[in-house]
Image (tube, rainbow, N blue to C red; front, side):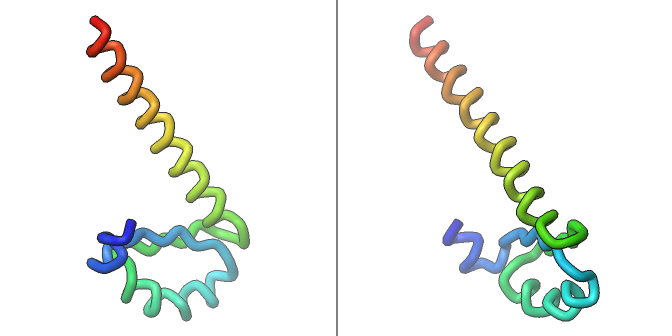
Length: 72
């Protein structure tokens, strides 16, 4: 989020040509503390989508547990 961006703690999952990633990595480390090369073009987006899906599943589980706890 915004706080992580201001603190320079973002995570970047990057896909593309490895030489181009290496050239851009220095700039990305100015904004993020974790820069991961994921492979060819599109793999960074795929990793981000999977990460977001896992976070959503975790949040749904948390919400369901809270709802159950309140009702019991």
